[in-house]
Amino acid sequence: GRRHDVAKHGRICMLAVLGHIVTAAGIRLPGDIAYGIPFADMPAGLEALSVVPAGGLLQIVLFVGALELFVMKDIPGTGNEFVGDFRNGYIDFGWDTLSADAKLQKRAIELNNGRAAQMGILALMVHEKLDG
Image 1: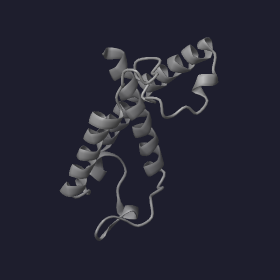
Image 2: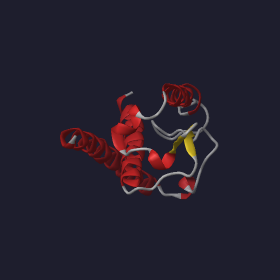
Image 3: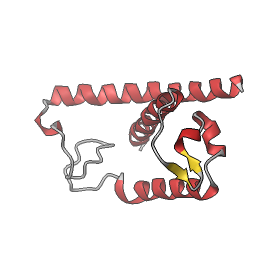
Image 4: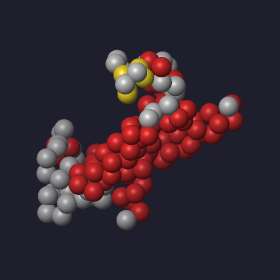
């Protein structure tokens, strides 16, 4: 449903904004992203897509597809409390100890932060393209 998509896209965009900020600050993983291509040489933002080999991009697409099809989904009967609750009976991190009001507030905060991140990553991409 729509709420499920808003939550998922918001989570992805929050990670994307964080990734953009971290790489724009010059922070990189050690080692190579591919043979002969060190992470340190990777540009930030969309330009990185032109440097990653086609096989690497395919791995990313396949990994995200596997997550989408087999991991990040609502599984009926596993105790999920709301649309977008992908814990599926495995992960808690203290969620179950929160009051109903606190849960509702945290879900609203996540949705609002996700919406802001969607606008944020869009703005970062537009800014990157306008600056050339």
